[in-house]
Image 1 (spheres, rainbow, N blue to C red):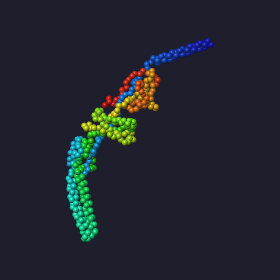
Image 2: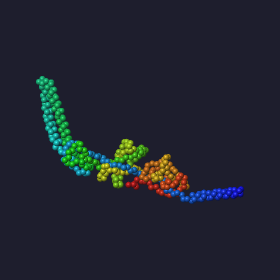
Image 3: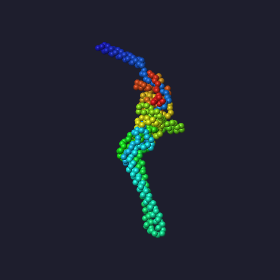
Image 4: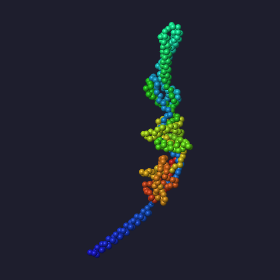
Length: 388
């Protein structure tokens, strides 16, 4: 019995020792395999300062400098329309003619009325002068003299009233000919010859100026604040304003450059934006009011900046950070302060220096302190001079 127990204990001890030896062998083998495994490859790029002249793009809309709605100011039948829809007209050109006969008759009637009132005033003044002579001699009473004065004043007032009515009639007669108040391109007519027009008839036609042309668009209040800060910082040496250009709906760039002429005095609380306006020459009439275009605003002067791909930037609760390659090709984390997004790149204001190696691809495969196999790649900086 005792001998059997001793044999069992011996067998268990040998088994335990074998297991321990086997375990140690597996651990050593695992370490050996890990050491022999290839390092994860990541794409890196050397950080450098580049000279850029960035541009921003905004959706804008064309607006005519002047947009005039032509309406009738009197009642009458339309006799003629002396224009072709869509053509250019000059200031003072005749557009419409309304039947003038009723207004000519009114002018004639009031002209005669003015003549009659002038004759009445002349007679009243003559009687007044005679009354003055007679009252001094005692031939008429003071009451009769007051009556003569009243008749003179009434004749004078009646003449003035008739003259005012005549002026109104002449003005109405002039409204029978409708002329272009500005030079520009005329639109589509809304009536036909023979129609009865009146001030309630609505818009007869519109005229818009085509040269120059406004482009209005909205910018964020943050961008406006940044621009104001830069202007204030460089007040001792003022810089040129940014240059706006236009990309047409077909993707082509509009030839002439524009200039800013208006910035609104308030922020739209609904959108958090400020409306700005640029003016462009439009001699050939290529731009028409109401078009949606892309305003491309280029910086006035180039600047030095560190640009990195947006995909290389990560963010957590503490802010933005990037992954760098340090000594012995190990991964490091660096906190950075980001500036403006420019095309597919992102400007780094603080946190990176020239010569450092930035991981731009393969971030998901690495962790801090891990050794990696860096593969060099050149960052292509965005430059406005290479854009459209």
